[in-house]
Length: 173
Image (cartoon, rainbow, N blue to C red):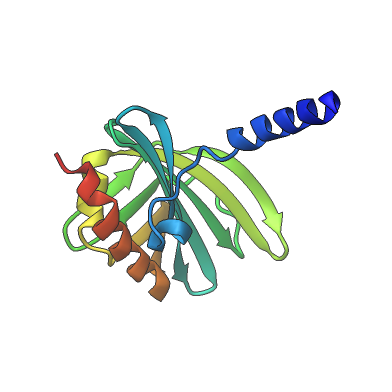
């Protein structure tokens, strides 16, 4: 009987360790995740937003903390052609253009018939706040003399508006 209680206690202890991640809102469940870091500090992960350009696709996600001054921007490019590290990537709306010049290559692989490259860079939290004010984003990828323009999927526009309405008010000072 004592073994049963010991096993039940250990199982309960492990289960409680995995339930620390709080949900933010019902709308945010599929758009972002919020993690407790310390008192007064939360970390947000905005799940990938999709952008299209002819047969190419770009997915971009953002990670930041409420007390940080920077945002990590990760993006994946799915294309028929192989992209090496781009010279420049720019995210724009009618209010601002944010350029990420220093990116690092996380992974390059072939997925089915497409090449996938995953890269990461940083932008300021203030730039991200300005970007979030208008959900109609475009992404331009510059590589050598080539420029590829990616436009948001319909769901991406709605997701960006939901993020602006639910997360950004918590970040305003």
